[in-house]
Length: 183
Image (cartoon, rainbow, N blue to C red; front, side, top):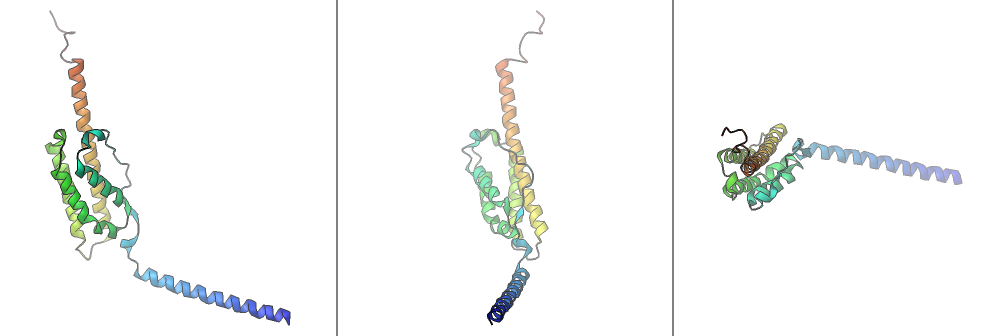
């Protein structure tokens, strides 16, 4: 009798567990049916970033650092989150464009890159209103933002390296020395 009771209890528990597993599987299928591919986390900036070597020279440029923070948040996120934060990113890029306080950086090449970044962020903002937009299109646009931002950082480094080189030439009086001159 004792063994029969244990067998009945064991069978009851076993059957109850099987029913819970099927209910869980059905719930998982229902959840997957309503998930969108735009809700999957994607790493957008997979290329190595270009660090600004002369950060202390651009410390007063608020817009640059706001855009940097926005792009750090967008580095590993979902396409839906990218579309939702596109408006804030556009405002920060506009602030970056309008608030260049460093005179050395206020040149045509830099302004062209910043305007391109602004246009890319506007395009990303407009994508939010397009219902048929796909994840690869969002990914391509977001990757374009990171590429242009990398170009801006490279240009900042190049401008300051050129200034350092010119300053060293003047200090060393390299080209203007009279070593090779004929007296």
